[in-house]
Image (tube, rainbow, N blue to C red; front, side, top):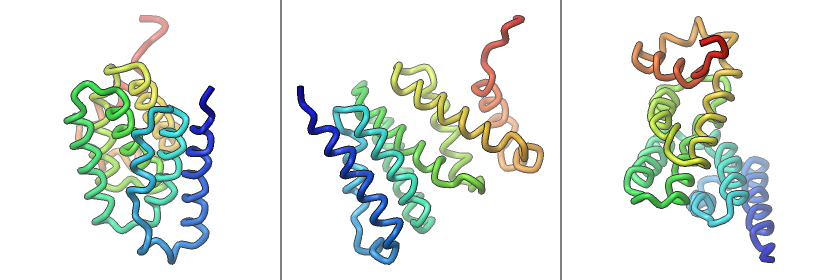
Length: 170
């Protein structure tokens, strides 16, 4: 059995830890080192890369966040049915949502609206999207009345549909 994926996952986590502890190295850091691991054949490596990317994205300027977001959207739209590429691109977008825990920036609203269309695509992709939306909702439910103005009515409805799609009594 191939256990090299464990080393790759550990390596990605170590990169994130080093960058967060030594943030002044960020300007010399190539983010593609981590983003390339989002497309690894092993799901644990992809998840580790997404978690690592979330901690690194917190330190990046807005311009870089926007360009990375657009890159992930292009990858997701042009994956050609490749589940690994689609899952990696969606995990990259989820990392953006996870990186901004407290504030809801306009790019977070856009990303959440974008990833909801993948909720029913593939097993692994839809599980990641549902988990992201559930985590977002649990984090922002107490302050939702003050934050929902950042979403338009259509986005609020789409998010509400994914937050509680099933009713036991229906």
